Image 1 (tube, helix red, strand yellow):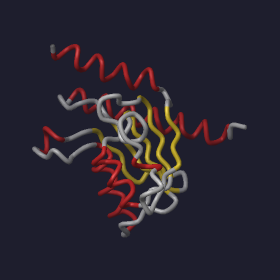
Image 2 (spheres, helix red, strand yellow):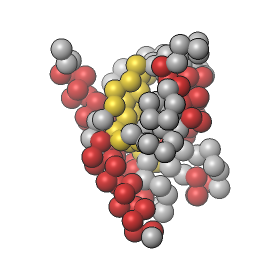
Image 3 (cartoon, helix red, strand yellow):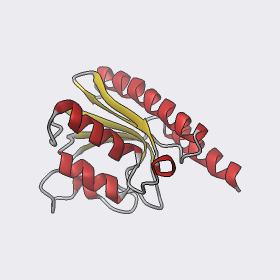
Image 4 (tube, helix red, strand yellow):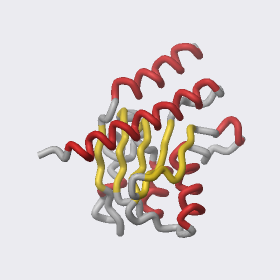
Length: 155
């Protein structure tokens, strides 16, 4: 049975991640947005900043993980949920495992680089010392559309 309170919170927070993705697109970045929530409070939110920061690791997920570590004054993020508009890549999935984030909610699958279920299953691998609860497909159509529009405009 679905926990309607969780579904409502997931929808609400994903809409905020989508806002971050839109802002990233306006800045010329790949439109991916993320935020981390702890006990109903947003600790960090960002879009991709790889171009702005001249940093290939400045994916939205990495930025919010770094900011959350500072906010919590801890490199472990117990009790948090990461919301992101696109299935995390292997770099971001590795950081999620290292941070011990217990739950990830994402929008669209990434068939060419997703490390949650599309290409790899990093977050649920029994070979690792931390597994993550996953909720996927939240506003998937809208998240995918942002990316499709962004790349179509570049062609």
